[in-house]
Length: 121
Length: 472
Image (cartoon, rainbow over the protein chains, first blue to last red):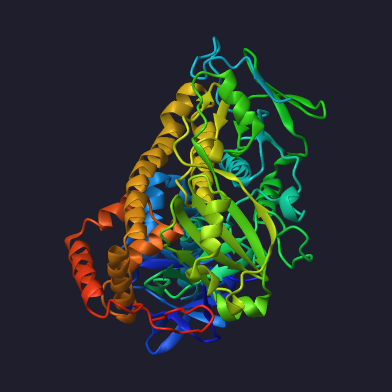
């Protein structure tokens, strides 16, 4: 039995807000916390588990990472190269279905949270 | 007896052009190797996306839970870096039980030295797997079959497994019909043949039609050595061992560590006893094994593989995928199965199941693979030159070793060799990188330096006694 990907220990930072991103990640095992720095305080955006992906915005934009990612407990993460991904999309656009679907779900989720936040204030 | 009748010219159009798949359409997939199972999985997945309700019967008489030949599809068992990434992007994660070992590096063995080429990201992204449930006579393994895992994915999506051997395919005006060895009969709107290159069915198809030509094939040799997990960890590590030896007709040789076993894979032109004797007596090979002694193998086979492009077959309501249709030369056959399976599924769901549809939307994928294989022949031609020339081997080894020592510089030769060994990039991509002036300049310099500066000794430095490995 063996596991693919790179191993991280509890608390290891996978990437930091502001880093230049050239890949996305898929969690093989364990949990990952996505967070941003807000006036010196950490604000958790979401918590992800096995089979979830993160860092996907780097595949589509030439911008820096907008949030940080940290392993919660022992975690294995597989890196998806931008070049490999884009070559795959070029040959087979349906490769992006799952990512588009998940990004759509995340936008919907953020919209709901924003609406709730505006109601609260 | 296997028969394929009434197909005529595959590209001939039926009087009544087949409609696209509709609710209630029935699809038969013959063969549940990676191509058949992935086709079924993607077809059902895409059909669900567009709210199409179809039935998929997946015909496979083999049980992948069996050890030895009964459950094995005879293959070296490597899932390439690019395929691992694409499957992960699709949401298909290889479970721990399927992955026998994650490959972290390639160790290149030559008569002028050895060098270990580490994965660019220091990450395990190549999976060593078993197609069945392990070697013949092995103890029950704490593992799962790769093919069995993909078959389960297809079944979870809704494919119906029919454990029968398809012996007869016929075309009627409005549908295709199948008959099996156990007298099962069925009528289908689409038949997908994914039986591989060693199947009687594709042989019959070639005889019965004018347009399908099976790919050229050659015999290879695959065997398993039982060494035990601890010994393998000590001597082989998480590294796939590749040999650049000046042995006529040998194109590629690799030792792949997997759990308690090591798989040997010899590819070339008509592997025979003479070639194997030369290989097993090479000091570069013997010193990889504990005490320099090669143990007896516990399981072996001589599967045939494709060495040139098939003329892919498709017609109204019929398409061939995977090795039966088109595959990559020597490398990443499972990756080619993924590509052809998905292209055929996309065509069937989004365009139609007629010959015109497959010509327009499926054939380009097969042609791209065939075109890349032509470049692959050139790349392997260069590889053969290096294999035959000690002068060239010294230069290649020196350039690679220097790059591996220098963690910050560019690694042009290492990346070319990595992608060539792992099958992670297209041959065209690999070839274009070798035309870069910096690559050519570096190689020329290292050819000179490797053959003048300390050329009398092995370029590599010893790391371990058993394997004489070099890690820079």
